[in-house]
Length: 130
Image (cartoon, rainbow, N blue to C red):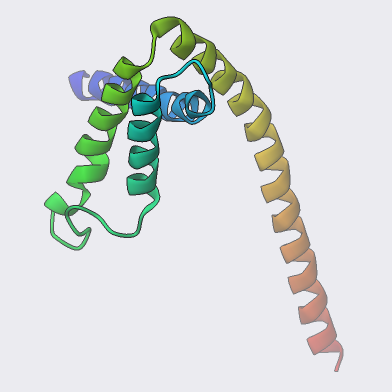
């Protein structure tokens, strides 16, 4: 039972970090945010998207340490650099954007699947007809 509660807390925390990362993306474009906070947030984003890691992913256990521990800590530090009122605005905007993008994303993926299935069916039918 305790493991289940821990997994739920971990899942909630992961969602909040994901939301905060989106909010940081919005905050970087805000003129009210200081330059050093913008620079730090951009460095975090560049590192997260970079194929080069501090610890290579093929190293057992330690390979994902930077993604699992260092990036969330860096995101939290960047959040501390931004005034709370501004961060609250961007968190709300990130939640609104997530609701919109999840619906659009689901529709896009569903459409891709339907087109793929239809094309596969057509190719199989054409192959069997010959």
